[in-house]
Length: 248
Image (cartoon, rainbow, N blue to C red; front, side, top):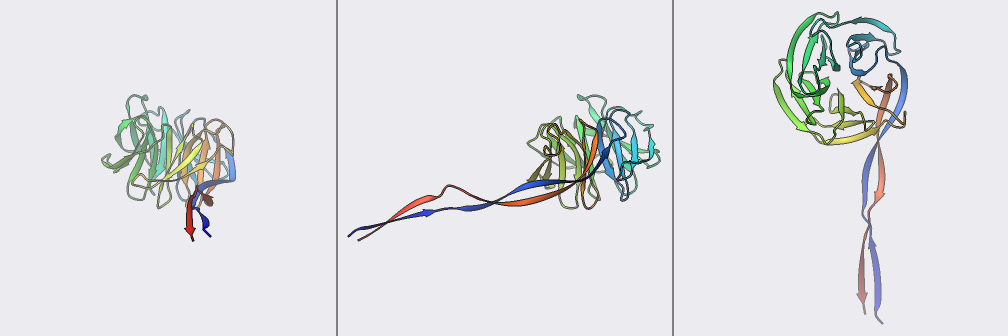
């Protein structure tokens, strides 16, 4: 008698999905919340409507503010803090390279350099150098404080926004995509965290990391959220192969 054995081979793979938990929130003191920075105690907002810096507590109270004396404050975008001073990015228009300006926390102008491309939006500090996102060419640049390009890579997102660094990887917002994207410093996409569960029309703009959690601003509602990002492993199965065995 001839026996037939059918063996189904199923391949199990692990994938990840980014989760977002809201811990707190408050209304921004300025419209167009384009830049956020963390100084170790408080947040600094760079608003795109009044183009000024605001020092704010984690509950939203404004402690201090200043209007940049250079370049006069127009079209403010990304912001970061280097442990001593603030850095902010300003655009004359979307077709011209932006300018990065360094200020003391009391508003005194320190230095400046011109961005390497057009429509530069996000800014963060990694402990040694600046990182800048450019919506004009979908690039992320590692920059010295003097404006030299140290490295760069492209990202497959058209609406890249402000940036953050957690000590290991970079993060950037995608406005139309309502998400935060995690990427290595060499350009490998690690994870994507969906913010649409917070608000269906969430337009992710300013972003920073406080050592434990992230702070992200919704440009539609001008609300700043403290969020916790987590990676959840999901067990999924692909189609298997059917192998037929014969015996007599």
